[in-house]
Length: 83
Image (tube, rainbow, N blue to C red; front, top):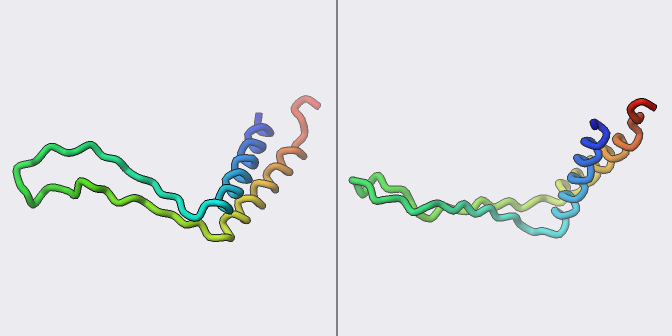
């Protein structure tokens, strides 16, 4: 079971690292329900939340892919249970 867990982590890291090579920017938009007006105008919050933006550097993609590859190699070389 631990072997398959490490294999899945390695594959996910390689895929996410490869995805970072092709994507320029990730944007996370947070949608909120409109709030009911409160008693005071000064206590109201801004109804439009600002999106969270992340632009991955080049080293992030290569680091994730290399760490994923090492994890996959580790998972392949683990001894099989009962064998």
